[in-house]
Length: 391
Ligand code: ZN
Image 1 (cartoon, helix red, strand yellow):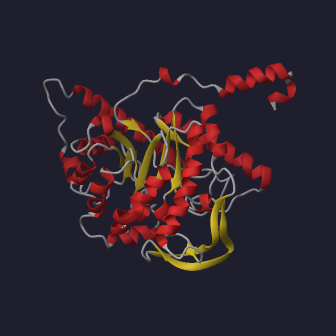
Image 2 (cartoon, rainbow, N blue to C red):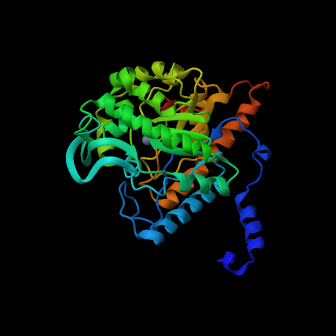
């Protein structure tokens, strides 16, 4: 609106003013940085709330404007909460896999087939690959550029991982899972390279399928990720979780036993991989926290916020979880994160959880600073120890 009332020269200056955030050099580089797995709830004026696959409210230019507004809204919320590495909150995509597939030629979306996904954990109606895959154009350029012009924080964009895509689509063309995964990996690489040029600092691939097909991860899953990150100079990350807090996942988790040891099978291979960071689930999970030791040398994004519960963690609880994981991950490699995306959650709950995440990390950072002093390592409270067995 403002631009309509101003002369061209002033418009130019005004655009420059809003497009150049403060220098990144001005930002302190704290230990125990904070970030999120990626997604945040969509406001009710953008899409149906509290749904993993919500219908958009608008269409055409109106919808594009609403996506942009929602992205900026969440950027501000992340900044205000004190999150160090921010995302677009995945406001422009309906679903974390299909948000990418929409931009791929060679897929027939008009013909959906029923497929058991994540090793038949649940059935989904999935589209079919019918010819050679090609990108139609840029996928997340708008979001990446929005982040660049509106924040001086480090910026992360997430993409679905090749193995998870292959597990969420039917194939009538390639006839081989690995060939199909490598074809998708090449397209992901094309978009990732462009995102890097758009000023994205971290590109994360979401691979919940890594916790399901552990042998395939070692056989070809990591190779496919290597194809996806080929030639990138920015930070690369893989997010491996036990899924969103939806009922099918909650039920599945009940079948995994007292200790969830899936990470144990894949972490040694990931530690040898070319990826810089691994994002994982920790708080309130049954993952033995000592498994984090297997990621030696990698940055580890430790889930200290539960996305399957509306209960807001206290900063003390977040700090306790951080301290218990710090025994296995050095502070310089430690990032406090959410267990998974917060897309299906209540918006107010997500905001409160962002704040708890940053406040808890700040608390843990303080006690980290105290370590060299006389009192030595921060002790773990009895309450924490009890939960620590689960975490
Ligand atoms: Zn996840």
